Length: 146
Image 1 (tube, one colour):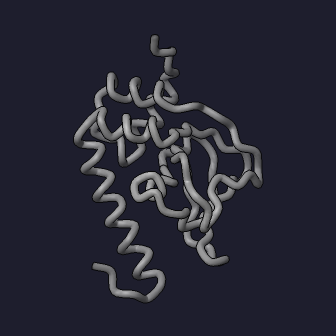
Image 2 (cartoon, rainbow, N blue to C red):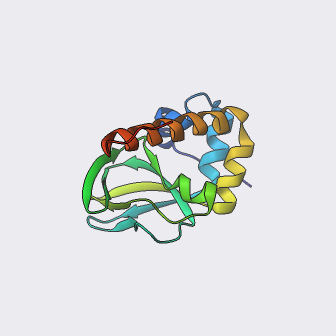
């Protein structure tokens, strides 16, 4: 039986670009897929080069993303990370660390697969987001991207 989902969690999930087109029912299903956790300041969420077995949706707070020792971006409420390792089963491409306390929705690989099954719009949006991140990463490194 699904557990209750707070209004603030639903509002945050609705602000996640990947989930923006989901209905309230779909958002409740998604919120019930994952585990809600709090990460303290300095906690490493992902480590570049290591295997990834979960993705994160930031509900509150901020996390810093570093690739090859260089700052890339900050993630805030509504952002998601870690999905690429779940899609291609490859190593993490970045190290992401909590900057201050961070509230997260964490989805493991099975829950991530179910997330993609909840709505075809999520799968499509994920493809667009990945392409956008790929292009941004290529520009940041001075490479031609696609």
